Image (cartoon, rainbow, N blue to C red; front, side, top):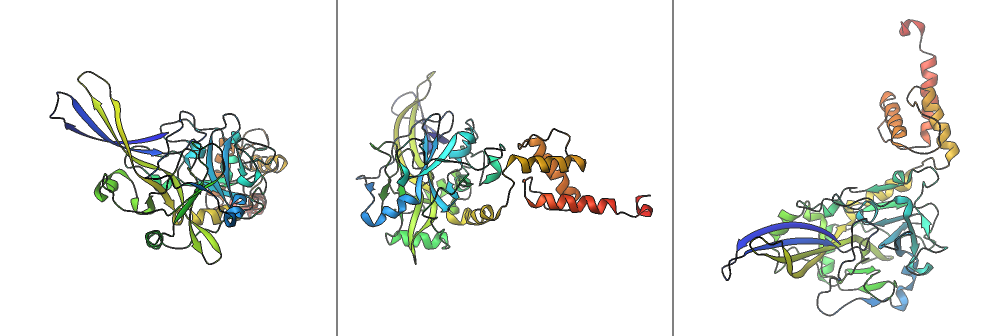
Amino acid sequence: MLVLTSLRRFLASARPVLMTVGLITVLLAYASCPGTTSAAAAVFGPDQRVRLAADQTPLKGKIGLLLSKSTGAMCTAFCVAPDIIATASHCLFGTAASGQPQLSDLVFQTSRDGAVRPNLHATAIAGAETASQSQHIISGTTRLAITPPIDAARDWAVVRLAAPACRAGGLPLSQRSIEDVRQTAARGGLSEIAAHRDLPDSDLRHAAPCAVGNEFPSATADMISRDFANPGAVLFHRCDTGPGSSGSPMLIEGAAGPEVAGINVGTYVLSRAVIAAGDSAAPDASEPIANTAVATSQFASAATELAARDLLIEARDVQRLQRQLRSAGFFNHPASGRFTPALGDAIAGFEQAAGLRETRLMRRALLSELAAWRARARVIPATARR
């Protein structure tokens, strides 16, 4: 459980203790993050989580699990393209207060492809051969802030896979504004599909309708604006969730079927704790206020950018890049065929020298850009060199 805390203190008149009331945002992810634990479900009234209906079965090929091979920890993720998925950033990178999981330990499988453990259908993140998995991910943050101002609106990531695991294609990302999505939710048109670790199996569950609000009995709009950075990009919804549901898609109906309106990332919880004189705090009560989802507008362009990236993946091509950078004087290390921080620095140094936009990415175009740059350097007139 990822805990984001904002404390408000007052003196209790009934007895001589100091009562501490804290607003705690819990990201309900049984994610593959070191230091996280399985959180409780956030259920508002009767549990709405039901198995997919017959006409929703095709979605099993587009929504699935991001799994840790070593621990079995999981998040939900969904397909954006045959080889690109989206999920919550903390499922990949942990938080500012936790360790970072090994990207090489994570695999994705659609719900059509099996159980809650990596199997023959599981697909790794691209770049494993060259240790360049981070180059195949675009995320809102790699160090999610878990104390106010909480940057839940940046808790998103799009990921290229090592192979096209999404044989059914991807879910379209909605182009509607967040205000339009809120109005759709008010008409009962917003839903969520996720896996839940607290339920007996890893089958996807559908929850609807997802009511959306800007304030709640236990949290005013002013309180939310103080606790969250950019709350206008967050959907505070009341669809039922459980551990493992981080990264799941919030869906609305589009012209050609379901579209993604956001990524579910966690739960905003009011937690009360009592501190007696000289004693440590002990939880006294916990009340979910609402779940949180990142609006699609925050990551739609990143998904487009990632799809357009043409990166070097094979070790022999990375070695070729390293040798060219070394010949040009930007890299002073062996041609290992693997991505390292030093190689990223060398790429950035060349891009700056050549007047290119700094990316630090092993772009395939670098090979031709380096060749052209070296050719220009060789034909500088002797008078200019002097």
